[in-house]
Amino acid sequence: MSRLAFSPARVGAMVARYSYLLRGSWPRLLDLMYWPTVQLVTWGFIQRFVGGAAAAGGPQGKLAVGAGTLIGAVMLWDVLFRGQLGFSLSFLEEMHSRNVGNLFMSPLRPLEFVASLMVMSLVRLALGVVPVTGLAVLFFGFNLWGLGLALGFFFANLLLTSWSVGLVVSGFLLRHGLGAEELAWSFMFLLLPLCCVYYPVAVLPGWLQPVSWALPPTYVFEGLRAVLNDGVVRTDLMVEALAINACLFAAATLAFLWFLRASRAAGTLLQMGE
Amino acid sequence: MRRIVYTGRMPAALPHAIALRALTKVYRGRPAVDGLSLDIPRGTVCGLLGGNGAGKTTTIGMIMGLILPSSGQALVLGADMATDRHRVLGRMNFESPYVDMPHRLTVRQNLDVFARLYGLADRRARIAELAADLALGDFMDRPAGALSAGQKTRVALAKALLNRPDVLLLDEPTASLDPDTADWVRGLIEADRRARGTSILLASHNMAEVERLCDRVVVMKTGRIVADGTSRDLKARFGRGTLEEVFLDVARGTGEARADAAGEARPAAAGDGATA
Image (tube, rainbow over all chains, first blue to last red; front, side, top):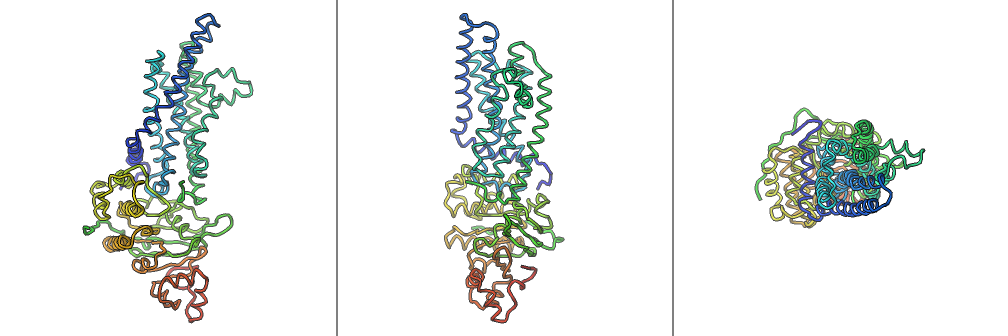
């Protein structure tokens, strides 16, 4: 038996566990694609309407160009939101099936568990959002992949933030049980207005802007607008976002481990479930 | 049913499979487990009895390392389960009504995942072996959530035996089984213990089961050990014919008076390695 402190084989075991679940449930697979598609179609038509209005004699320039960023922002928001959901929902599966005690009594280490949740977040994202990027090309002529290198920066930063949020939410669930389940769905929406997904940071009141700049996704959405409006890849913004993300992720990992220890101290780990 | 052949070995250097040292757990100022000290030698089966709220589940939770003690230590194979549990988790396992396995995964998938987690090199062969031992063949490819209570218990036992554990914690292992299947499962536990020298801590409310399987019986009340010995010793000490009557004496608080009246040692002070 493996005595390694971190075992990729045990991470693989957990990935196999979630893969069995996805493979055995087509409604789950459908659900992964459903909302991203609805979002894309809705915002795609809004973009077409605003863009059309501008071209027909409305305010020129900024508005028309700005409308072009909406569909990209929608898809990147989905990367952030679905990335966190993919992490937190995989964790919730264990709570719903009262399997948490079995897992923490096995040789699985907490950080291996976290790694498997990160892998599943990626898998669920690939299944849910990647097909939607194809639809965006097909129906609205917007190619997210055309962002090239910048897209890699955007993805890395958004995923790191989504995992940090997923870690904190999962830790909170571990400590406080399924009564806090709604957090898994709603927590990310707290960031939606602050991360300036659909508008520039300059729109926010002055006192709120520092809060916005403390959040890595803000840099991504500003970076997206820079690429689409000005054709400039703001690597400075991406590097700053990565630095903040590294701190956030480390803090979130510590928070998860702290919640786990608090759950062991409170004696709730064994009787966790519905 | 096939004859079970086990290959696991217990290291000879460790003195006790489980050692509890003044183990205490306090919830909101109230002790759920109060200064428990207990040694369970290797290769023995120890029964843990007690009414609801006696502290059995909390004790087992601390032995598993899922609950942190307020003070004291729970040692398994020499490892402190509060701080060093990952050193021995691969050599122990448990079955408990408080946990379940993913409902939507089939029995085979569930066992496969746990076999991978325990790092079994021969996982397919081991799963096939357990499927035969526990007669899981008819429902190996059914979702775990679609099984009857008895079938679920058998699957949980298969999971508990998967890694050929040196230390096995069983919480009500036959609670939802019909008498015939329960008897068969007891036979399986006995065979496993005989073949591999498994150390077992068994919490049960089935006194006949405890009498049959356990070398030693520990009775808890309000977080303390109030009686400890072989079932024959306990029956003699309490002047009772059955272990169930002993249990009722303890539960109703008449045990100590009865033992004192019979001129016996106080139950809490009796028993090897136990202190209340």
